[in-house]
Amino acid sequence: MPRSICDILPSAAALLGVPGAEDVLGLADRVGDVNRVVLVLVDGLGYHLLPQLVEDASLLASVLAGRQTERAGRLTELACTFPSTTPTSLTSLGTGVPPGQHGILGFTVNVPGTERVLNHIFWRDDPAPADWQPVPTWFERLRDAGIDARAVLPDLFIGSGLTESAYRGAQFIPTAKGERYAQRVSAELAAGPGLVYGYTAALDHAAHLSGIGSSHWHTAAARVDALLRHLVATLPGDAALLVTADHGGLNVPPQARIDLDADPRLAAGVRVVAGEPRVRYLHTEPGAAPDVQAAWSGLLEGRAQVHSRDEAVAAGLFGPVRDEHLARIGDVVVVCTGDTAVLASAHEPKEVAGLVGFHGGLTPAETAIPLITFR
Image 1: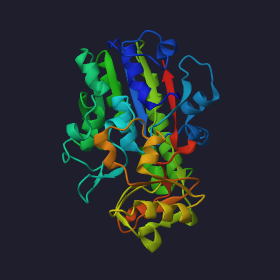
Image 2: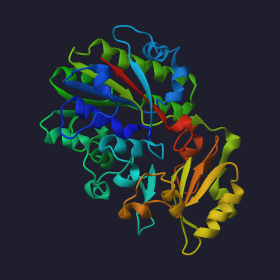
Image 3: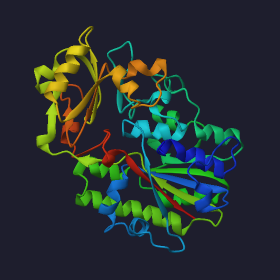
Image 4: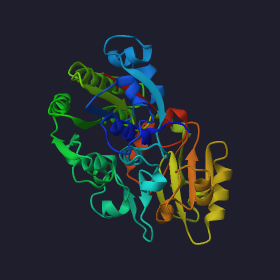
């Protein structure tokens, strides 16, 4: 079975001596005996995007080149979970289980029994995070084992439903806008043994707004590299730095975009639209699911894989799915292939149509993520 984002925290916990944790990634062979681990997730740092970053990111360039220097990082390819989107991946990272188990099954999902679409990024306390995402996190397991676990996060993340679902059990260290983030993470690592988690969204933000390969994106890559270089330079002798991502991405040109709300044939029979442009969950009117699936299959032939819910679950897209989470998945699941995206102009903010970079699908550009280890 391919190794994935689900394996990172269990392996890190094994390094730190958590009972029952298994180092399935073989981190001990790479970093040796450590009592501190700093894990940094770079949002949008897809494995297949690394070659495009080398001109702006000297540290990542040295990793990609496999240079054998004293503090060179070692690179491995992992996979994120599906959909390849931030809320799903962060929760799989934190819990160590696939989305079908933890229930954060997309960027947005329908709240079963309602017409409401829950955006996991803006979610606070309704539904209650502990009910919506019931799986214990590895931050809780570290804490219960008496090992300090801290998450250094922007202050606006603290108290959100997604933060509670993905990082529950961590001690949250809020950072203010404009604060020197790299120095704050280093200070937390220097404070004592345990695990420190950090996160940066700069690269993903630039990819969405301006596109992968844009000057904005390259500037963000340089900022990410500066953060990582600072952490490597200040890494204590008994510590390891792990760097990973939640997904990759691709640019979607105007001609590859389809607006379901502009085509009556695609809108027919659809009651609630969720997901995101690369993966759509269509909740249908009673009895309409077969017709909706047939219409979408014909109209998007060669541009998307169109499944019924049962087919998507049977194909293992989400891993094993708990019964109580099934209704969060659409009656029809549309997974875009190539560089296609399905917009929903009447169902989501108009800003979505203005984005350049997207992710969520099953292409290697979206699902392959790096794991880079430094000691």
